[in-house]
Image (cartoon, rainbow, N blue to C red):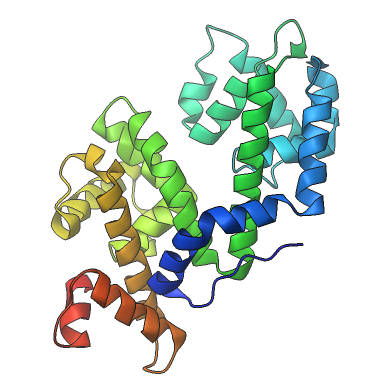
Length: 276
């Protein structure tokens, strides 16, 4: 199985991964296991499939859930059945109350009609691509979980912010998405004990910290490319600080690269002070 190459940790490793992402993904997708799973997906969805057969096919369920970053949840058969059943009911508010963009997208792709799931050829090709990229993110996480968190943040933040109807809903979505929340908590230097507070207080703290650390007062600004990169810079820098990197460690090299990237000057102490 192809293993992603990430030669250093921290922001330096992240920039390397970004530079080599396309070629690494292409090599990963060419691995026999990934090719076989994609072929299985295409074969099983080439014709309409009954909802029952779809739910009973653990391999197909694993592949399709993985495409929506829900890999590992195929054991939740009853819950998945409920998601699909409610998606087929135009009067249901279940998915809106669930407030989980990943399951909402999954339900939209596989909404059954008269007991059968039909996916058009273009949709099957898109699912295959999504499966490959999501599987690659998983493989990246096996090498360096912070890189997987960064990829997840980069891929989800636009949908999380854009799909919400108001500021409060955006904040709740950010807090409810584990990878995105983890990145933001680390980048904003927020204590994990904050999770014990009522969700309304957590949302207020997150909004205040985004404003004080990044100058973000309009949450839609989170979706701009420079803001995404800035958050990920802070994420890797703060994680390195929290881990207590040493002067000769790969993390220290990454910090130096990060310092150059954002224009840090004379001393490392001056650079680090921006994040404390």
